[in-house]
Image 1 (tube, helix red, strand yellow):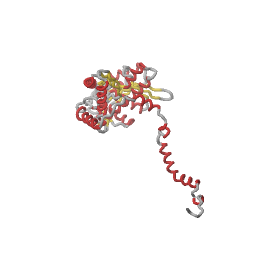
Image 2: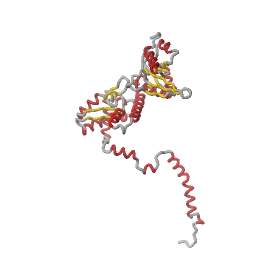
Image 3: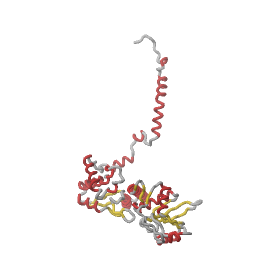
Length: 355
């Protein structure tokens, strides 16, 4: 115990002095924390509060999520997919071989399918099993001539039946929601179905573009007709149009309805036909679209092709509201407006005369 009088104020250890020192030390740290918090949209209050969406998802998925495979089991499934199934083009998943960054991701569809088989064997023997997916590739579906899913691959149905005796109904998510909406119209709107269908098409475009690239260039001839139409729709939108794919069930004589503002409040309507051809577009095709232009009372018509037009078609289009876009011009437009480097390989030799 000291005998001298000690004054905290005189030594700068009074409460006010201590607060001032702490404030000076912490200002920089607090400013940095404020900057970090501003960069994120999730704050402490969000974590403390109950998230109603997550709560509903937890309730929906409770007891409905299967157990993961062990590391040893996953390794065997990946090896089976990569070494046996995919080289033999046994569905599903063989289209992912070149587009995924590693064997594990490439085998993802097969791992999912294996879980479906295991679940059916354990819980759905002899029953109806509905498989809903938004994967529209040919390693899940039989595609129509436009590249759209038409029916599930029969190999998948047979493998499921052999494994469990179950019968499979396979549906795209948009079609499933469309069916559900018929029974619960107040819960699922047509807009929801349309948005899901658009997201499916966007995913299909991304998948086909990824799988169809050659030396980082997009091979247009490897795209399905449907995907090429949607790629052209994106191109038109980048060129200032509002573009809409015509419904598959509506045989309108054109593929895309494109609208572009002109002067003032005026809007110009253009009917667009997309042709993924390796040889010349026939003059009959050009004349048919011009007839559709007149029937629809539209302002313009356009045929966009991966090939070329006969000289008689070009003569016919002169002086009319009819634009003919050949493959070479299409490649240039994709590069200019979308930044996509594309190719059209294996084109047949262009004739020197008219066709």
